[in-house]
View: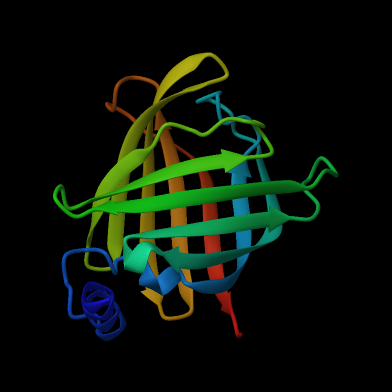
Length: 176
């Protein structure tokens, strides 16, 4: 019981400054405006779709992890969409790893991206296969203030020499 009290005390007072609190800003519920490439697997696609969603994030594991859920009631194709992220902080490596799953690829957990924060900006890289094409993946988070943030995704089809932005989410906090 003593260990549990120490962990809770450190977590609630933010005394531990090893990176586990980097995603604390995202706790709560958000309105999310999406701007997404109509075909993310096509690096030359110039068509974009825009839509709205709601996301919530909850912390777990004493701040060493969090889970979020994104819900879009009506996509441009008329269907609903749901996605979730699982983020875990590796204390020894000083890295966050982020996994994604969605109704767009039922039963699949995407390979993780990993990275870290530098102030209010976080960059995370990984590799994946999208519609049969090998891609490098980059996530970038930017915290603008306590109530607004931005997430962007880019793919590289040439091992990181060039990057194609294909999805941007603009977050605005919904008061609890």
